[in-house]
Length: 174
Image 1: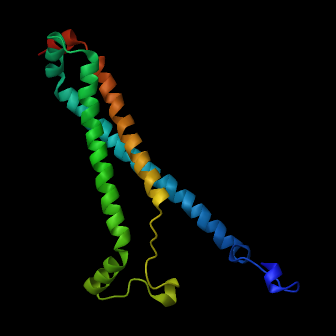
Image 2: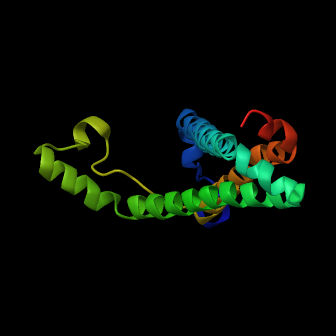
Image 3: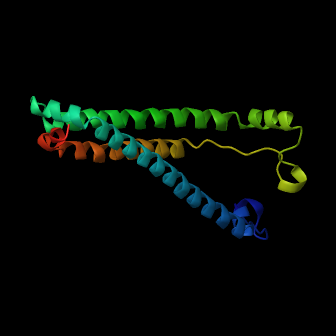
């Protein structure tokens, strides 16, 4: 680049001139990744709690199935598939809604401005007149993969607890 401009030219990149801003953008990206990961983990905890409640409600049925010959692995599969289905449905729904939101952010902004009769992003105050939204396919892929992994891992724990259920103890107080 210097050769094209000549020997006396000084070439600088905006990342050099605005190093503090560039650093803040990198920190924001990492912070948002951590926050998004925590949201996915909270959703995974909801899957754990729902499957645990399902196991508690179906303890008698599980014990009867075990006494008539159902294997521990078949019980694990049943509850794992139930939890994984919840997680996969949630991940796909979140992916579709998130992409629709990001791709239509301008229309959503204009609709909200029309509803509230106010300018949401005054260019004089925020230095921008619209919400910038860029969909990065690699980020979407990793978030979707993390969501699917977390939901399947969350479904595995209560499913494994189901395999440890003793049919005799479960039926004793019924």
